[in-house]
Length: 125
Image 1: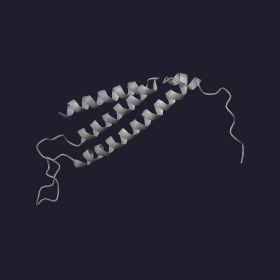
Image 2: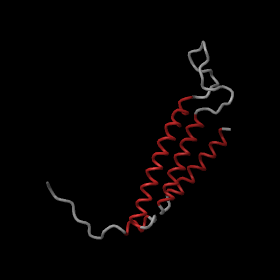
Image 3: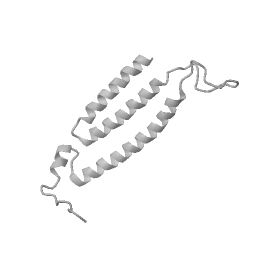
Image 4: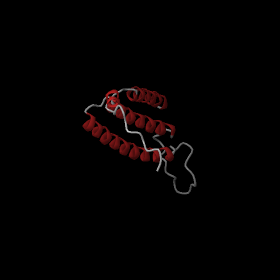
């Protein structure tokens, strides 16, 4: 099962890099979302995939049984899901606001929207 997940993680990383290299900001945002999912799947796969032994310490033992899944990657994934969702929501609002102001989501055209002769910053205070 782990080799299948390893191939899937590789496909997710490939798709994420391809999307992030685009010149459209909505594709960049989707690439960041796919990259977050790839990292979550990588952490999940690194914690041993087992169905037989849950990561619960039974009564009378001080540690997990030898075949149990590691609970730390599962806790990291829960935290990463919340953080990636909040980052995606922030990027969605930022992209929408940039589209409202500039009228395009093409990053090349966004660069053209900058003023030609910006006012120089103050030399001293």
